[in-house]
Image 1 (cartoon, rainbow, N blue to C red):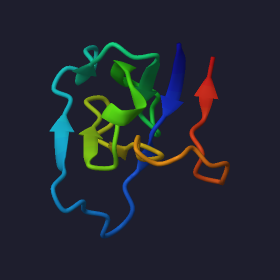
Image 2 (spheres, one colour):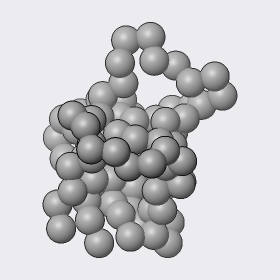
Image 3 (cartoon, rainbow, N blue to C red):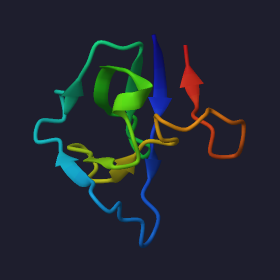
Image 4 (cartoon, rainbow, N blue to C red):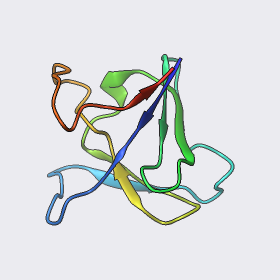
Length: 93
């Protein structure tokens, strides 16, 4: 299982049909799936989603961290091919 650091939203980055989930309890992840990866806040490292499949973490899914209030988004869309670039996910195995 890997932990992927999410990224901050960019100015004006609003998905057409997306939404922002709010983490009300900083000690509980917002989403829980059945995949290999956990997703952490870019600012404070708080775990926001656990056991997620890449296709579940699209750029339409934003999460406001319950610890530091940073709005996070997946580094790459789960439907995009993982390409090596400066925005590539940071994996911590």
